Length: 378
Image (cartoon, rainbow, N blue to C red; front, side, top):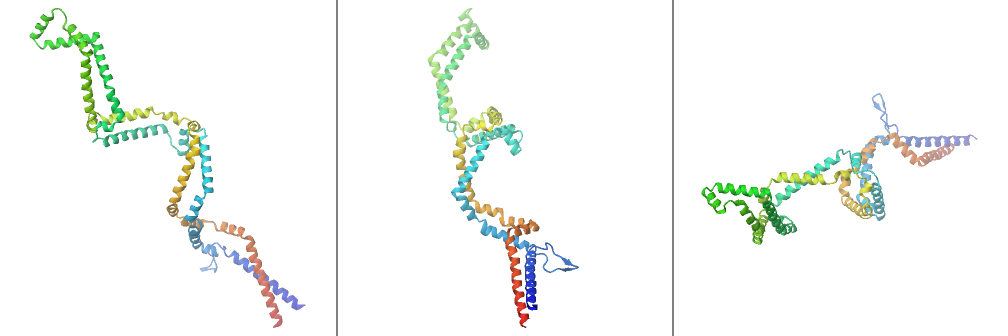
């Protein structure tokens, strides 16, 4: 009876010690979290293994993630997968469609999501400045070229084709002016002033014409002169020569005749003011996108997603290097709560840790049994 009692006690004691030892060993992986001291002496095995090796663990985890888990090759393989690309395309298409069907205006969108106020004035100012600078740079680049080489060929040809109409307009305006009361008075005044400077010539002309006004004699002849075909042909040739000569001038020479800074600035301002900027800014997105929604979603978006993914894959090595993932993992592990880390590991490996404890108890019981048998025989 004493023999069996002794064996039982030694087995129970051995199992208890084995299980307790393993349980304490598991707890010592995490606890205590901080170093303990008795006076000036540090208590052995404090802090626990993981808190003590926390920095080394963080560094090792960072290297493991970058070298073996989140590698450029693995990410590239995932991105190049057709299924992933289809999912990304569908996702982006859904977001684009949702945006295009919203009733928010561009003005509200820029203010809400980007914090941009006074959008209209900003766009007008930017556009006006861009147009003025663009025209100035274009003129500077064309200074050494002839006008006909800078201006569109159709524009140059159209200008010369309009010259006959310009000549007819000028001659007709001249005839109408001479036939008007104001024109007759101006002609008479001009002739009188001319003859007054000539002295004796006035008396001779007066004697020749008698009591009839000189202007009344000259006016019909001038009108006849303006209506004559030779006059038209002569004036047309003169304008053609001047026009062609002007077109053969260097751009710099032609620009020098004008105040181009004021002209370009004024032209840029006029063009900008005529743009329907305010109308577009206050129009809902779903109204603006009616004409191109299907094209944007079905054609442009898939191409944009494919191009974006290709660019991402091409720059992935550089991107991962710039992100310093190992450092990020290291910093996250360094700042992670030890209590939370312990809770996570124990919750994940709860059954395995219990098995380790019970295994310790089993081994302790077996060792106690052998010890009891040895005691009995010895």
